[in-house]
Image 1 (cartoon, rainbow, N blue to C red):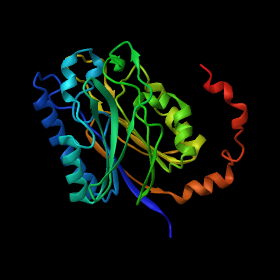
Image 2: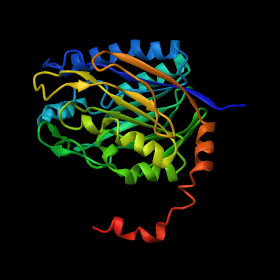
Image 3: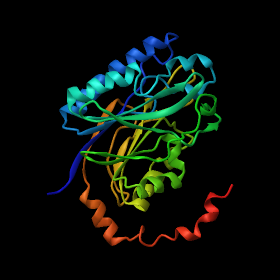
Length: 289
């Protein structure tokens, strides 16, 4: 029988992004996403990925220690516990990107994977951290990821996660493929005028080079008080040939759903033997400092 996975992506504008009360920002963002998660479930999604640091604005637009208050432990923080309840309720696997605190003063940009029973499966910590103008000051907040490039076995396939700026680095995308990923999700926060020209180039290229499915998520709208640009949405799925299957709007809250035929991976790999024809013994200089 064909292996079909119905997968969903959620893109949304952050409510109350200009508010001073971080608790209210978090609560409003989570409340909005609960409705969108329910919509994904109603549309039959078996797995659903939220956007980067889904429960607030992209606060890396400034360097301010007050945002450390948004950080939570994984899996023992309140947001992940709530999402475990949601996964059980909807019988749907969830990928939940939040601001993680590992210990006092040590923070990561992390996505947690929760299975349909509500069980915490594992997490991925963002490796590549931008520190560029305007308004992407991530090294002020996050430590680079230290958990490698894990691939998680689930009932709907082998799942890999890459986060936002990671997508500019093909090495990790290849590592996920070599580790067995069938679907790679990339939750992002990216604005027009900076990297938009790359949005539909890099990730389809990763999908084609590694012959797996990619789900690319971007938030929408302008976030106050910084307004570093328009978060331009256009979340999409692409297939192992790098073809975009379905794409969201530029400026609306939206749930993107696609049926991913995982048998297509073998079909494409039997045609293009990229993994057979690799020459890793010649690539040593790629990891020189």
